[in-house]
Image (cartoon, rainbow, N blue to C red):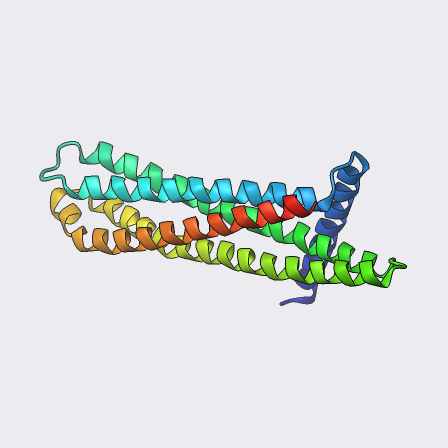
Length: 217
């Protein structure tokens, strides 16, 4: 990477980090702490996962419906519906990526703050309890973060196949070309099922983590 571009990246990341600290400080001034922000962001990520799951299912169903067409009548209308569903799927994939990044930023900020505050304890007993709780929370978070990232990783191969099929049909919109994609439909169906399974597992794990965070606050 060129020195100038490296400098721009460093400045950008520093500015982003500073903005986050200002945001956290502003929220804490009105009684909203990092723990609450983390819970809120995980909830929003779970909602986005649910929406992404439904959107990808919808995109697959539009493709499957298109492939069943026997002649050229109505192909253009069905294609536009499928292309729109795929475009919305891409939006959901990008939103999910941003949501996960936002979760991790506040999680790391929370853990850094928690670790620093442990040093302030005068009571050795309370210090030890807080340190154990921090490690437990970090491990639990590590699990849900991994699952969120894996759910997003499942999204990308499905999106790529859907985009490829959309691009192919854009220039080959006829019954013969559409029918040639029947094997592709089966591949996508399998990938969508695995995506749904991963999304649901991630959502369940996030829900359990949120309950633990709320019960210990």
